[in-house]
Length: 115
Length: 115
Image (cartoon, rainbow over all chains, first blue to last red; front, side, top):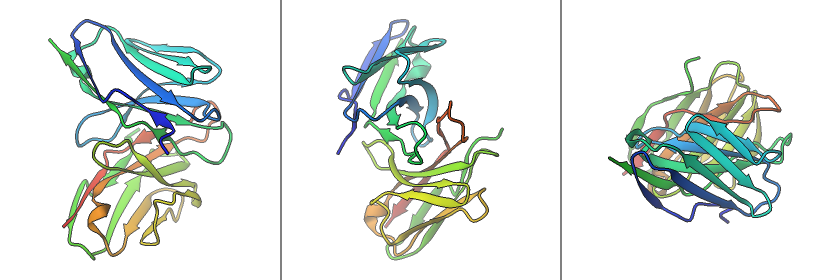
């Protein structure tokens, strides 16, 4: 049962343009969302997160938007750089304060940024 | 802060053999998680420790899998009588016990190949 879905397996963007990666979730109990970046043969690297009490969080070139009513979040990367080429995973957890700390991951989107 | 470390990084074994992986979390992180990732999938939760207590186990964790965190610091994951289906990347993550931050930080992973 895939509770976090990334429906685009790949995305190709020109350097300098905006990359928009999308993620949908089905469990309304999720209240914390994260994006990770992963290079081959390495573990996921944390990028940015957002709590369900917010609808936007920004960190440098990375912005995450959360639409709770649509159960949808997106990651915007502006401007995109060739070094951003990697697999991006969306993850969710919740409810806050529970002892259940697991993250639920999507299947990932391969981002390719070309010069 | 040296990050999460895992050992070994790669392991090749024959079907039926036992293997053990080690994870050293970020110091003072009291939560530790194990995940498994197969090709084309996101990481899937296996088990979770808070200090030395194992608080949650996924149904993916069959009887052949056992995890320990004896002193609340490093953790080991053992797979007995390995099967070819156990071939995957095994990821360890840790997080601090802070209500405001539930971000999990991942290690580089141990890639297991069962022949």
